[in-house]
Image 1 (cartoon, helix red, strand yellow):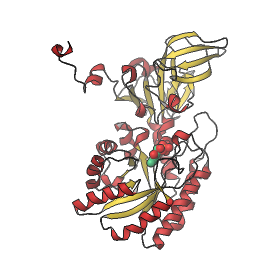
Image 2 (cartoon, rainbow, N blue to C red):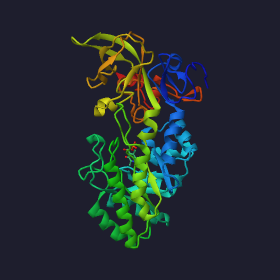
Image 3 (cartoon, protein in one colour):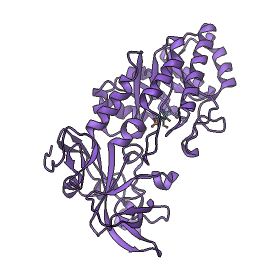
Image 4 (cartoon, helix red, strand yellow):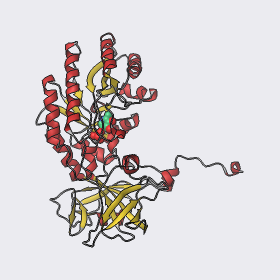
Length: 432
Ligand SMILES: Cc1ncc(COP(=O)(O)O)c(C=O)c1O
């Protein structure tokens, strides 16, 4: 653990400015980057704790479990930190389950979601006795049943229903419409439920919906919760009482400082919808917990003219470290780590990758930049490091966790040896 670079008040947490320096939980980001290099992810432990607790406390005693969606950021240390706060896990592949187990999550604390679980994944998952496998089709249910029958004990399943609700989010991260690949359509789900009485190796424990991510209005989220409540009531009346309902994740965050759904309002709406069923609620939050808790730091490596009004600022972080802008035109605030009062210049902030779509931020007004300046790309904690790649043979970036005035590397920067560890060069003689 390293404790240099403390410049801000430690009673103020998260990312804030102190004497012109952007700091994380009181530690200067410049000091961390000078030591660890860039591109670099930096996370605030205090923000992670605050955001998890805010969601958890908002239930005001109503029975619930928060299953942190590991897909948002599955760094071991981050998962462990959240587990320590009482989080459970939502895993989207058998490998996320493996990682969750190494974080210390027990099988009964894990739900297994995901639209395409391979036979090999199911062969490994069913015997674990997870809290539930969230089933996406009649075929998948039958495959789970066959494995459970071989084991001689029922598998705990939830059925993910596609409620045909528009999340009003970006089309690439909307999942609740009929045209999306996710879940079982309502009619088909009802037919499936009707078969369950005669299937002793399947134990239906919940119904599940997840209508999308980065949802910034309350209506679709409330609609999804009401839908699940109605399904639970219908199933109870048909002699299939559930153990809980799973309302998925999806709560959006403010990338551009425009208003988003308030956490307490969101939880109140969900609880109000589910309360008549008396069932505990499972949520699968990802972005809303970890998104604002991370920044990506990159350095300016080149500056060049662009047009009459703007310049290119080429930085050493791009789509290989943070895919979201290239993938869905996502907006992230960008700011120099050391501020100044100089009149701003317009920049196209671009990454170093050989793709025109590798633009981190368009038309940004920033104080005049110089080579070597450090920029912070804000709200990059979710779907940032988790989606990073080796394209252009760029090493995966390092990650740092700041906690209570000290910081530690929670993933070291990848080396070329790490990158090549799985590859086998041709024998010298065979290359002729
Ligand atoms: C099934 C499921 N649950 C939870 C999540 C987490 O969503 P979010 O990060 O928007 O909270 C996702 C991601 O889209 C998901 O697919």
